[in-house]
Length: 49
Image 1 (cartoon, rainbow, N blue to C red):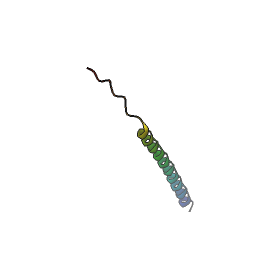
Image 2 (cartoon, rainbow, N blue to C red):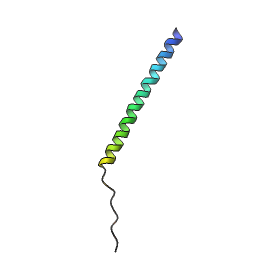
Image 3 (cartoon, one colour):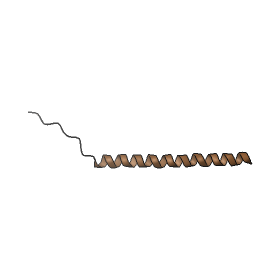
Protein backbone atom coordinates (compact mmCIF):
# COMPACT_ATOMS: atom_id res chain seq x y z
CA UNK A 1 0.00 0.00 0.00
CA UNK A 2 2.74 2.46 0.92
CA UNK A 3 4.77 1.37 -2.10
CA UNK A 4 1.79 2.00 -4.36
CA UNK A 5 1.34 5.49 -2.94
CA UNK A 6 5.03 6.31 -3.40
CA UNK A 7 4.97 5.02 -6.98
CA UNK A 8 1.90 7.15 -7.73
CA UNK A 9 3.57 10.25 -6.25
CA UNK A 10 6.72 9.57 -8.26
CA UNK A 11 4.68 9.14 -11.45
CA UNK A 12 2.87 12.44 -10.79
CA UNK A 13 6.18 14.20 -10.23
CA UNK A 14 7.66 12.81 -13.45
CA UNK A 15 4.58 13.70 -15.51
CA UNK A 16 4.44 17.23 -14.06
CA UNK A 17 8.13 17.74 -14.81
CA UNK A 18 7.65 16.50 -18.37
CA UNK A 19 4.73 18.89 -18.88
CA UNK A 20 6.77 21.84 -17.60
CA UNK A 21 9.69 20.94 -19.86
CA UNK A 22 7.39 20.61 -22.87
CA UNK A 23 5.79 24.02 -22.25
CA UNK A 24 9.23 25.58 -21.88
CA UNK A 25 10.44 23.92 -25.10
CA UNK A 26 7.31 24.98 -27.01
CA UNK A 27 7.73 28.60 -25.92
CA UNK A 28 11.44 28.57 -26.88
CA UNK A 29 10.63 27.17 -30.33
CA UNK A 30 7.80 29.67 -30.83
CA UNK A 31 10.08 32.55 -29.84
CA UNK A 32 12.81 31.33 -32.22
CA UNK A 33 10.43 31.24 -35.18
CA UNK A 34 8.88 34.62 -34.29
CA UNK A 35 12.35 36.20 -34.22
CA UNK A 36 13.35 34.42 -37.40
CA UNK A 37 10.17 35.56 -39.18
CA UNK A 38 10.69 39.22 -38.31
CA UNK A 39 14.46 39.24 -38.69
CA UNK A 40 15.52 41.27 -41.70
CA UNK A 41 17.49 39.60 -44.44
CA UNK A 42 21.25 39.72 -43.98
CA UNK A 43 22.92 42.69 -45.66
CA UNK A 44 24.16 41.99 -49.14
CA UNK A 45 27.79 42.77 -49.94
CA UNK A 46 28.28 45.75 -52.26
CA UNK A 47 28.44 44.87 -55.92
CA UNK A 48 31.97 45.37 -57.25
CA UNK A 49 32.86 46.69 -60.68
